[in-house]
Image 1 (cartoon, helix red, strand yellow):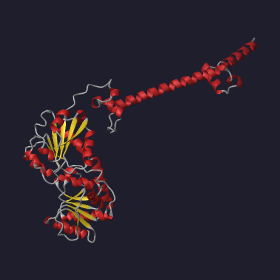
Image 2 (tube, rainbow, N blue to C red; image 1 turned 180 degrees about the horizontal axis):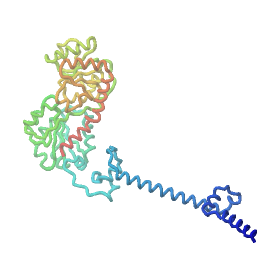
Image 3 (tube, rainbow, N blue to C red; image 1 turned 90 degrees about the vertical axis):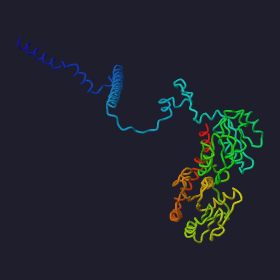
Image 4 (tube, rainbow, N blue to C red; image 1 turned 180 degrees about the vertical axis):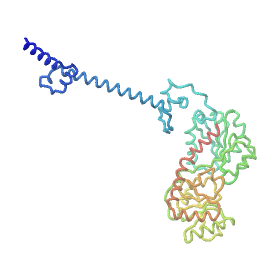
Length: 421
């Protein structure tokens, strides 16, 4: 009996040892290498796919929780310094749709457009402009076409008229919203009777007065809505005549005439002086002759006959004048009229200009033109830019760029329309 009891105890202990918990049993089974029969069983493939799906689900949930935690942390954090970035067109359109009322693809979201103000240049696109060009004054066909083409880009229609035509019938037939007269001749031909049929027509005259004020406007029969002069010094004269709305705007350079090109050797010079000679200019001339001793110096102006070492030239056409500008290595300009400033800049030639308030209104001193105020400054700057040709070329290149994008007929037309409407 005792032997049987011992055998039963031994059996119970061995069975107790063999009874391993389920979790330990599974871990041991996973740690053991699989047999060929187990690896090929379909049940094992099913467990693997279930585990991979669970892993993917857990990774996506983990990523979402991390994204939410980052968003909450950024929302609760103190705001950092703003980063200035240029928004895209889509962002600007969604942020403030009222600023872009003309986009049809946003019409379902667009807010009501407010009334356009009267000085908005976009009003000009619905207006008709009559352009009155004189016959007696010297205006090249290219210049007339430049003015007309620039205005056509801004208004609905441009109607070109001549002074010798029947203006009253033409104006009553076309009934333009704007009437622009070019030159001094129109100032004495426009009368209130001509505009009796078109009461709402606004009128402007662009005077040809680079050197002397226009006297015809003093006896004009019409009260112009806008008077455009080419010289700032004429403003007090026209204000004395009773005109209140006056704008300074010189004629732009004709890009078909004044442009960079290589002229014939007869037009070449080391220094070209643009301006008249007087006793007040004697010190300036003395400095120029010292700096350019033995070199070719030419002058375009009056009263140079008694000055030695300087050749006098009087061009007979604008084409010849453009050749003298392009043939000069450097230009000194005093008593500067506005139009020659633009013409020299359009040729891409470096110019030193005497300082005056008008220069700062018309151009950008230090960028596209260099100024001087006395003979000492003229001498030092002549020496500096003669030695530093790269600096001189940079100023001339900026002047050429400005003549195309800042001083062109299109820019003048935009200024005119903005001042008139």
